Amino acid sequence: LQDGVDCIVLPSDKGYLCSNHFFIWITRCLIPFIVKQRKENKIRPTEWGRLLLDDHGAHLTEEIKQALIKAHIRIIQLPAHTSHCFQPLDLSSFHSMKSKVRKQITGFAPKTQADKIQRSVKALQLATAPFANMHAFAKVEICKDCTKTPHRAIKDEQQLGNQITKLLGDRMK
Image (cartoon, one colour):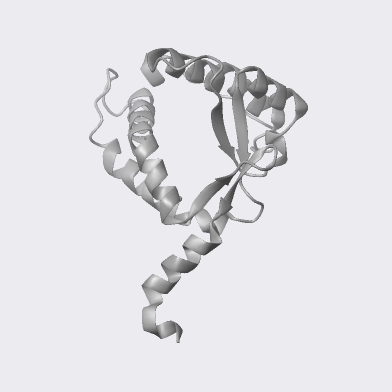
């Protein structure tokens, strides 16, 4: 319901994301959104964007990769089994989102499903603004490794070590 546009609902037999659903999201939602953002922010259409993904198999079919390349969007893939590393991101983003949901105003009748979804979408957009995301990633010492394709997010071990040393101080001796 972003900008008053109806949402797309794609059920699956088991309730899990499949590559077909992800491809539909990429082509109908993400790429048009990126195109719009590039125009609004006067960014060249050939400027490379980034899409941060986990290592779920549905994300990396050849069809999906080609659609993203054609749209000038690079994949930055998170390392396998690193969900626990991102808990601060989840906590900061979702805590912020939950505190903003009730404050959002929509054009829909109050307490209807459309109103609830629209308020959630608006709150999520505010909670995951670029600066908020950068701050959350910095908290867990995540940086980008462009030496591999697709690009990957990695833990900056030295920075993480420095942070642990700073937090624990004399207790490490």
